[in-house]
Structures are given as structure tokens and as C-alpha cells.
Length: 357
Image 1 (cartoon, rainbow, N blue to C red):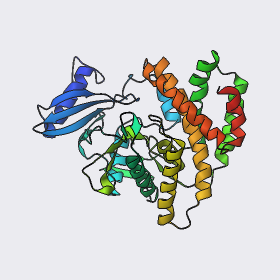
Image 2: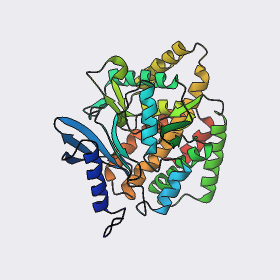
Image 3: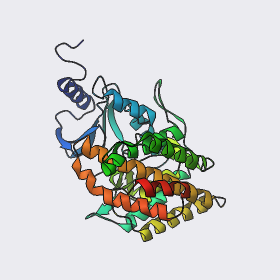
Image 4: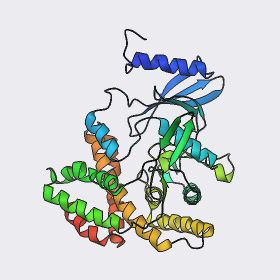
């Protein structure tokens, strides 16, 4: 037993990292902090002898995550240990998708050392590169044409159950709008009657797409997590990362994530072109692909994601002291208006016109 340090202390985790690197042939590697995402995870680049890797540190142990945060993660099925990364990545690679190869992992310590797929995304100089987005749309169609398991066996007796993206989880996510964005606009907490109406309308909207196609939803299928591989063959030109929160739900959700990318401006024309490219691929896979059902689900999922992200960006700015996320709000507000104007969500449109301005 170790003495003088706790299992959650930085010094203890550093010892675990060094042990993992030594055991996997990366002893003495140079480590540098890598700018992470909006989650609680942290990342480092690891370099040794001309090789490069990425070390993910998953600090969701002990008392490091407040009870309220962990409760929310549970409600919306966010992964709470690194088994999800191993399981989802393993299955993606088995189906021929470019997910980072795992070099070493310590599940108990929350550490994964994996292939470094670079930093080039679908965006250059702040603008979407259409060729890359079309490749991503086709890849997404290919992913949605596959059959995916509910349980993934990782190794030995270790397995991972892919959660179901329930209506309760989708509404809880959308309610971040009420928790954070509404007060930002109104200067006061959302009244209970506003919240009650919001939840009732969302239950009805989600019920209306109950028959929509479901499958694996990677959940953040957008430019920061789609890494362009210029030297790769066409099928491998996009590397997939940040898929740990994969759920089983309406596949149109990931289409909305890509076609209305939260991190760059997607024009109406590009959104339409990407939708058409995706649908054409799905029809090629299956002549009976239900385009009408997809479009209906796309409208609802697009509104849900936009609603959620408006709340998340304000939360990141106000609670987590990351004010840069406020710069994305005008884009999301524009997307919100676009979806409302499309007529895809008529029952919700009036509510948003009243409370989202």
C-alpha cells in the first residue's frame, strides 16, 4: 500500500503515469500539456524516439467531481470512466473506422495512451473546408449503415454497456438552456411555469420522432473531433476522437452536430449540400431509407442540440471561467433561428420566439 499520498493526488497520478509509460515502452518520453476540450479530462502529448502519442487523464475519481456535476452526468448518460473510450474505439476500429489505436491503458487510474492523429480538423483559418465536410458526411452515412452492439467486451471480464439516449436525458440536456442561457437573457431564473411548458413541449416533440432510425450516436460529431488525415486513403481521411459519450439514440442527432457545426459557420447552402450528400449515401445503402422520417428527426435533434449548447456555452463562461465560449453564441443563435424558420418544430417555435430572444 502507498503511504504519504492519496489515490487522487497529483503526485500519485504522476507515479501511475510514469509506471504506465515505462510498462508500455515509453519510459523517459517527453510530455507536454495539450489544450483539451470542454470536459473534465486533460490531455498531454507524449514524444519518444520519433514516436508521438496522446495521454488522456480521466480525473473522475474520488472527490474530484462535485456531486451535482456527477448527478447531471448520470442523468444524461455521460461516461464516468475510461472504459467507454476503450470500448467504443475498439468497436469503431473493428468496423473499419479511423479511431486512435490504444498503446496502453490503466482503467483504474483513468489513463489511456493512444495514437496521435494530429491537430488538423475540418476547418482552416476559422472557415469550413467543404471537401472535408463532404467526406465527413459520407463517413457518417457509412457509420449509420452499420449494425452496432449494445454491449462491448473489452478484455477478460471487462465490458461496457452503451447507454440509451432516453427522452429524459435529451430533455435534461435541453434544460441547460433554462438553467444558464435563460438567466443570461432575462436576468433572472426561469419561472417554474416556463420550465413546465418547456418540458411538456419537448416531450411531445420527442414523442413525434419515436419511430426515427436509431443507432450509435457519437454525440459530438463536429469539427474539433474530426481530424483530417491528408495522406490517408479516402476511407481513412477522417480520424474520430471524443466519442466516449456514445449512446444509442436517433442517428439524426450526429447529422445535426455536423451540418450545424457549433464551432464554425455553416451556411444554409453547405448545410443543404451536406444533408443531400448524406441522404444519397443512405439511399445507396438501402433503397428503402426513409428520407421523410430522417428529415423530421433531424429538425428535432438540431433544435435539441442547439438548445443544449446555448446553455453549455454560458455555463462554461460563467461557472468554469471560460469566457471565450460566449463568442460562439451568435452562431448558435443564428442556427436556432434557421431551424425555427424551417418549420420542422412548429409546436416549439412559439415558445422559443417568446423566451429565446
